[in-house]
Length: 400
Image (cartoon, rainbow, N blue to C red; front, side):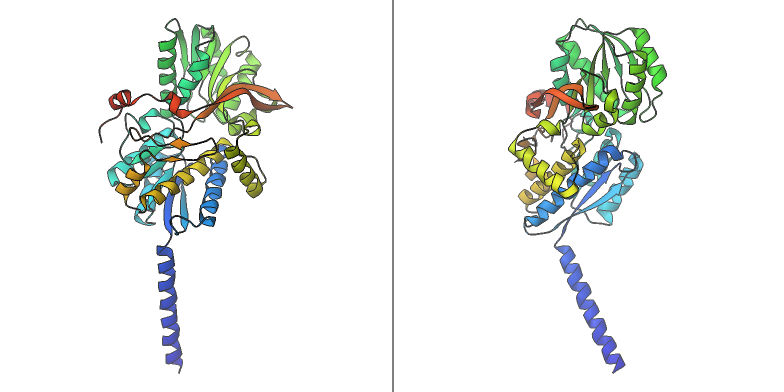
């Protein structure tokens, strides 16, 4: 009798295990990689954004009836760790695609992995132009507006400034180098009279703001391009305010209007910087209103730009999978090329020519309100208006 009960129990266990495996087979897994431990100010809101998207997608029936599951890993800000995570997600977890990454050097590392292993990769945040151009490949797509796009948006305003002598401050790695190079190129094309009088390249995350500020001041520029962000930005602003670096000088700054970087400045927020950012508190469109309401209802908090990026990355991944009707990589690539979809900022499209999305950015000026930094005088710039045409892209991007 005991033996019979044992075999019956074992049979039920095997049946349950089989049912469990069958249920799991109905899930679609996406691999997600980001620098959670290194850059929590951006990546924690980013995680909340993609978790909201997963919840909405599954509540609406999943992807062609299958549940979406995101398997997430932390790369610790190290390209080698990101590639290891990518390999584990593909080989052990069996994910249909890879998404995410923040730092540009990590985005390039995962893109290279995707190209070698023939895995679909939707880059969320890395901004270097190389992701879709110089080192672009058929397997990699990108959501965020690139350095070229954001530089072009900023140059539109910066080129109207009277300043002729310019200095630059940027973190010394792929993102900072790429941002400075493209801004200088586009700015000099519009304003051949400009002189670039100084460049400062502090290490990312380890700025010694005093010597940087002193060196820039000695060069006596009329305007400054800033590309630092996060804690480095706070240190630079504090030291610059103390030493009067920004007084009487124009400043143009990538990303500074994003809440994750603007909020920590509080009453030290400089006035009148021209920035890209995300003034969530003043955007009045039906698409953004719907996102804002859902985000605040779930988290009882306001969104950061990372929230938008995380949310839209997974929404885009789901749209690609749904259109492909398959987890086959080639079918997903075909589905993604030219795909248009809604976003909290309006409709976006993934261009076939370079796999860059047309998600745009807000450009405005920094100001203080009630002891906090805000963006004012802003407008939304559609990404499609700031991208080069196919003929130019073909020169910039290798053939697949």
